[in-house]
Image (cartoon, rainbow, N blue to C red; front, side):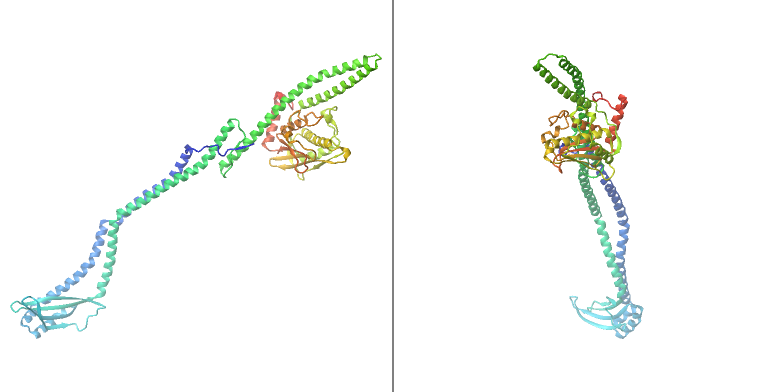
Length: 572
């Protein structure tokens, strides 16, 4: 069982790596913004110094006042012209005498001298004791001969005293009407209004310059603070996402250091840490397989050493026991028939049991002398075809001719079917040892069906041998429609000396697994989903995988250490 490492990392404060990553992200985001703030401050100050130059303000004020001065100068000039007319000596003398004809003559002389005049009139004004006007009489007047056009002209009326008679409460006054082209004044008036607006805006901006600068500074400062806050939060979250996976790896490594190879790191994301987690999990899987393989080989090595010693200890006294009983039987020359029958029965029992012990010793010896696999690249399709041709009439002499397992594999009530891959299926195998695996698995299936379905009943059993490719290598399956493996025995079927048969030794499947492990593979036992009986699956690594390379290296080291193709497990 693999234990996923999801919630083993407790909640905690940000670590050094998280803080460093967050600071890096913070500086990366804040430094450009701070530089932009400084540059904007400099540019604003520089632009303010250019646009809000006091001399520029003064010149704009002068431009705005220019039109006012121009209009005032025109009015002043017209008033001066009126003053000049009112101070004319001839006009004054004529006005004193109130001589209308003489006044008109003088007006005719003065009028052409002032082209902007529209009309001139000499008026006598009488007042009462209080100074209020009581009578006005026109003495003489002149005009230009056409009326004032209000659409094109603007007028100015100016009145000046020519002569005053304080005793009679009367005065002679001159009234002058001037006209000027409206276009001249309106053009300058529009310019004045535009200039005044510009000047007003300019002075408003100049007065609010500090407020604008302060507002822009506050806006940049607020933007900087928000950016810093968001950067810290996002940087912490991003860093925590990275460091969380790193911490999971660290926690998993600590558990592995304590000996727990069942831990697994969740594989999330699509970056380098994901590849690291995937590689780490694969490494742990290979380590767990290697540990299980080593433990199994050590356990099998101990069983092989024990089998070797038992074979030696049992085999030595068998021959003397059998010879002694045979000698007693041969030398008895008496005529006691009952005693003779006892000797015959004793000899028969001893020879039968000695034969059984010899077969058991042979099985022990074969189990103890299992060689190490010498792997070479082969095609499993060709290998299975070769096995199918040989198993039809094969008697496994390697197990000893006296062994009950040395019987023919075929049975009259069992059909063996072979399903060969359509395409070449490459794997690194030891053909002789793997053939023994196929022999043992097929024989177990045939014997199980034979014991469950008697030949006399005419029931046909089926054994199917097939091979197919799988991830990282190939698999060989042997399944049948026999009684299957009891659920409580599935985990023990590969243990040495464990058997469910009345006449079995419990070494066949132990030898199978030992050979498969020597191939750096694995074997599974269970129930066949198609046939309903037992199902064994042998998993073999591909010819170019790390497992095959490790197996070859193990064989090479054994040959270097022992000088032979194999070494006893107890000596490895």
